[in-house]
Length: 636
Image (cartoon, rainbow, N blue to C red):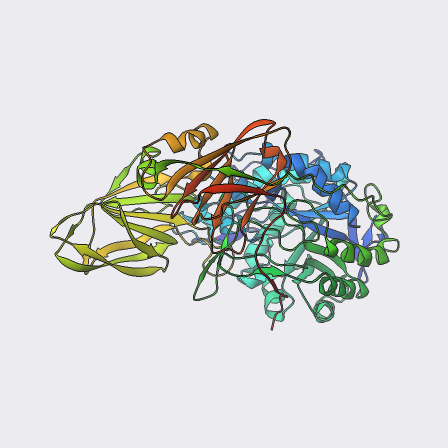
């Protein structure tokens, strides 16, 4: 259907953004039949009863050299299917041509899944949530003036159409109809938790079909009437996402769609972590019991997550609970059955036992290579480096080092990250206001997310609220005022999706606004490895924070876990690759370092410390993700 928006102008989902026609994936005129269908409440594969036993594994959270290993572990769990989101912003962080190379090589990941004997479910969004920065939407998109994401607004649909023109044919070509592994594609993502724009959802469905998707389409929403009402699409299988009470969910879905099978599109067998909160876990016995209930209901299921992986770089998202901004940790281990570094713990074996109960009767032998039909051999445990301690060499001081690595942008007012066309990282804001004699109140409004305040190079405090104030001392003269603002991750869920970053309001001394600003953009995740290696020498050492490095030799690479005892908050690179954020408030105290990031011979860890240097780094042989707290998501 063509949805009329913006004074009746339509964006036709059946045509690419350039207006040309879309051929079928194989060049034929009509779509082939899907391999997965359903009849009288039963899921079928090639016409035979089938149970989809899936697990979530995100290619963008795993080093590409480890994709095959993690897929093999997922198959050994007893699953016949893997599902993955596709984050738009990962492939197109700036408004340039989308990339599908290296860690973004979706086609290679799909081929490796097929090699592992797994079917694939693809969840192309454009919104994915996933505790991923901005829910997968590019910041340049949500920064467009007047944009209304996740609606049938013409401006938004035009941009989605351009992205889908590039993405969806790649997925279509890998469908089971063309001897590929893709057996199902999700329409949007948990839309019923956000809105009820039925025109938008139907446009999404039609846009996928028009670009060649012929396999099973489905939606995924929470197991409540409100969420299912908002997220369901006529003629599209309705699935549920849940962490508990699957019997209630099955009854709700069967009452609403009497002819559809029960599909749990996400079973939350663990949970993610926010900085400053406990490390969320779920017992192996509890997770296995709920999985057993799903299977006893005759349900198909996807374990979210089967393998969580890592929010490398600055891709971790954030949430907001109505009062607090909650940035997500770097680790996305999620207490999954396959740990962040690939280890197999008690939960793996407890869930494997439940899956084995139904594997022989679930139609899994119809999958590409019999995945799940017989028990797969267990992969070996990951190789780990022996623990070691490495001294740190302090380098460039914080403010001088950062300004040496950036060029100033001048403006009468503080510019946001979006105005600077910077997706993530830091921005150093600098001005020269006159401070009257005595104690003065400095106020920053519209702050997102965290500002370290300096006067004439001396630290004065940290602001972490959207509107925050602190006292500064004046002497009737001009001072150099620096605010180092960190984007701690864009909100990925709820009504604040797309919120901007930086200083969105202004800076005041008492009632008077400060004007005449210099902004130093610092997109840390875009710095080339050569710049990272030279950063500690970019300026003279000075103060207790800034750049530092530590070097060590290895006979051969293996996985390890980086700890920074005594350090406060900052960012760590290994051989020029940004691992992510660290923060002493936890819960996580180590950063996972995959073996492919290390080299035989010399290796360098580079650190940008924002608050306080520690004396050394440590390479440990186990993760330290913080004190555990049991967490089971419900919909009370």
